[in-house]
Length: 386
Ligand code: MG
Ligand code: ZN
Image: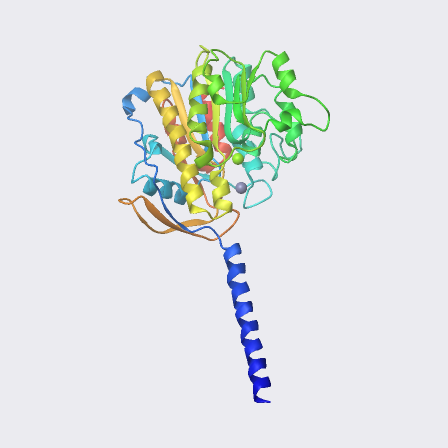
């Protein structure tokens, strides 16, 4: 009897140990990324003489940079991680924008980008269409109609919601093949991003890369090859789908920004360029502090490229905006001396808080204050005299 009881107890203990081990294993596989992050890639912001940014009353060029999902905490995390310095600080006219969509307190990137690109509040997931599902004119299309050169740069697919809202008109952001086809309907001088497959592997059998080439585009698959291109129109697909993360893709976004600026600035009438740091949002959704910091610093280096150009030019308005906050991110601790941040999150989705906007150059003072995201469009078109 005694041995039997001992045996039973032994089996019981073994069973409990097994359960505990499985629980530990399960928890490990479901574990979120660490909320603290120690940066190791520091850089010095570009030196800027603020007086050289404004050499005219009105800007000839407009560079709009959008940090997707970028809230004040994301910026503070980047500022801390880079030991207290960012290029964004050179953009001294600061505002706050309200982000609600037509039908939701918490917006998605499609309706938010449509508000910024066209000044229209629309329903979630829409790109470039108003509440009646009809196409709305975008600032990129207005710029083209007035003889300005135009460009789009993104780390996501170029057909993703944010860049799409500047050139496409679709009820659903998910229809990236239809969005790709819309790139053939507006003459755009430079676009650089991922998403080649939406132009080539299509349900309708069209090969949009060939169609672009027939219209005179140089179509490339790497930025290196773009260095020898002296004039547009140029399309660079840096990936079949979205681009990889910062450690793999390196300085793709700042370099793409510089390439676009080099080509667009050949137009004496000026240009409109939108540059998106697409994956700050992804870091927010994953509550991944390291990814947020990496993507934020990458975006800030693109801001640095814009500043370096604008300082030489003197007629360029720079606007760095956001479409919404992602992650409900807060900073629990950090060290400017060590470049370390510790974050906490209240959401795995977008949130409804106001997001910051920074501007520099001619007419930058228009962007001070609190206003709707549609007000970004109103101010940009006022500055350009549209
Ligand atoms: Mg986006
Ligand atoms: Zn998102």
